[in-house]
Structure formats: structure tokens, C-alpha cells
Image (cartoon, rainbow, N blue to C red; front, side):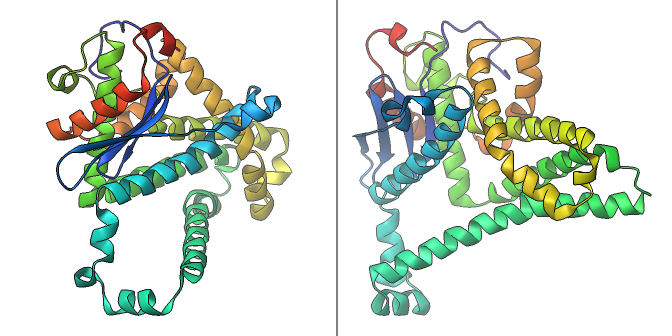
Length: 327
């Protein structure tokens, strides 16, 4: 853990997400979205969170719960992101006549909400296809190409090299995205979220000054989760490659197998993150290290206004008894 070498007072189950000019936190009281509004005030709203495992118990079983939690977090995160966009005034800015291009104005005047919904769905599908191309197809094709040039020298290690290429692509992608002004601000709120959680875990009063002193690198971050997924996928893919070498030589089948084992990889990664939240040993540190390094890109030092927003969101979801939110 980068700067926080001291032993934590306790590790909390509270987690969050950086939003557009805001932060979402989840804790014992539920979820709260706090956003810095255009007038400079902080708007905090409790958001209802529903978990499928509460209705269907098997969805809370180990491994399975990781897949369910991942899907739920994606959907809930998107909902909170849209809320923050509306509260921060971003939607008003984007939809104002002065800022609309000719194409935007034509689309706004001629297309109804249903058609726009379809276009949004198409854009989402294209995004998924782009992600598939970058993180599945491209690494496989690249390793196949290098393997042929090297006289099949990588055949027995293709899963490892695919994982390495996937990590490199991910790092380059995040590095490029972080250069965008709006994304940089979101990463600053990400830093404020981590610092606030660390401040509470260190048993300090939640003040701007105390939060500012904390590390912005947290082992339970989603960035760490992504790297754990990649590492575990390398381990499982390598095992399959050794057990059934005839499958790894057929590109389409090999990619299909990697997609089919994604739920297992996601579930195992989730279990590791939960384990890492409760333990601090050499095994945890090794697997968590890449994610902590990556947070140098996905988190930035926040300003005081951002820290105030994170504190407001955090306070809204905790009780007066710290024991209620221990991991």
C-alpha cells in the first residue's frame, strides 16, 4: 500500500465510485450520490440499491456472487453516473442551443426519444465490440503473428504473452484517456474517494485536512480488480493450454473458450478482492501490486472542493458505530 504504512484502525466495507463532479459511496445505510452543483453547493441523495441475491439466495454463493456483483455494479454505476451528469449541469450544457452542432440540432429536432434510445443501444454495442477487439481479438492475433515469426517458440506460453499484451493495451488506453480534461477531473474525484475511505479506516476525523494527508492508492479499488482479472485469466488460460494444447492453436475456438471462462475468472477475482480486504500478506501484496501501480493513472490528487464532496457522500452512508461497517 503506497503511502499508508501504518496499521489501519479497521478495514471498512464502504466502497465508492467517482462520478461527474461527484462521488458515490455505499455503506451500512445504503448508497449516496454527492455532486457539486453549478451553484457551488453539494447535493447529496440516497439511492436505492437492490441485490439479486436477496431474492434468490444461490446468487450469493461464492464465485457466482462475483459475477452477479460485477453486473450489478456496472448497471448501478451507470445509473449514478447519469444522476451526477444531471445534477452537475452537464446535460444542460450539452443540450444548450449555443453548444449544439448542426448535426446535433437536426437530430434533436427530427428524432424522437425512442430512436435516440436505439442509437444509444447501438453505440453501446459498438463499444462492447471495440472492447472485444482490443482486449480479446488483438492480443490473440498479435501472439499468433509473433509466434509464427519466432518459429512457434511462444506456443506453450501464449496465454502468458496474451495477458501481457492485454495489460499493455489497457495501460496505454488509460494513459491516453487520462489526458482528457473531464476524465482527469473524474480521476481527481477518484482520488478523493480513496483518501476519504483511508481517513476513516485510520480512525481520523473526517476533515478536509485529515483526508488530504491520506494515500490515494487503495487495494480494494476497481482498478486492482481489473488487473486481478487479467492475472487470473492468464493462470486459467495457461492451465487449459497445457491440458488441451489442440485448442490453443485454433484462434476462433481459443477466443470462444476465453469468453466462456470469463464468469469463472470474474468470480475468482471477486473472491480474491474480498480476501484482500481482510488480509495483508505477501500473496495479497503481489497480486494487488499491479492495480496499485495503475492507480497512479486512474487517481489524481483532488482539490479541497472534491474532498468535501467525498466526505459528504461518505458520511451519508455510515452509522455512528464503526463496527457496523467492518469487513
